[in-house]
Length: 285
Image (cartoon, rainbow, N blue to C red; front, side, top):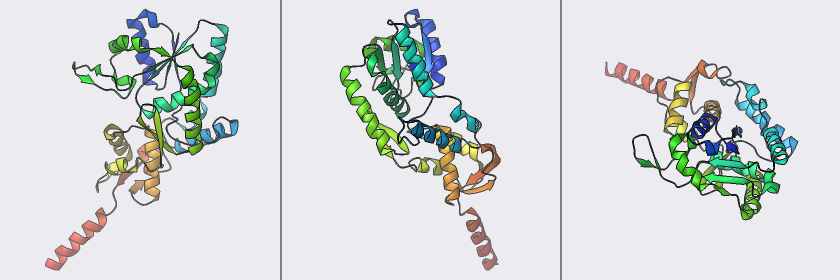
């Protein structure tokens, strides 16, 4: 048994789950790319893949992760290794764990077409629209696997089912449509329905966390990620913040081209307001 997850935090989470239930024993492997953002045109070709890596390197500039992160992993290599293991061991099965979010679902869509020949050996656990109990004993509907307590997964495992032949036919077609549309942002509308959005989709989330007072860009980033309803990664949000600076919708002090910690941001107009107040005081005097 090999467990497939789509977020780094879930590697440790699944290991905790396995410690609670030995029947789930197996390696946990992460699909690392975030296919919910960025270019997907011709993603099935080497040229399309390299264009995607180049995009990631560009937006990773100045991040704490370093530009080389985009080239430090290759999900195609993970795919190749998994196929080798399935071929070497006819009893090996893959369990794909998904939360109800666009990151997991687009990762699944990318993953599935490569494994059509292994139909019957891929299990799916899509924890969508399912209630779980949180640490306070309250029912809630999680969007991400890391919101679920490890012990709750022992109930969830009963929902594992083989991916159907119909899904192996329909879902790869859906993925092709998503890739051909090549939207810069993709969100989950419900079920497994992914819809494309413009690259400025998250801009209002960023702007809502700005004031006319200077703040560290990293603080605005943290607040945005915490408060936004439809989640995405910090790298994409910072990339959009820099775009808003270039469009002069955000004022900046410091060097945007360097580390994320090297600049502060605020909404424009504060200086003008201060000048107006000063002029009014002078006129009254």
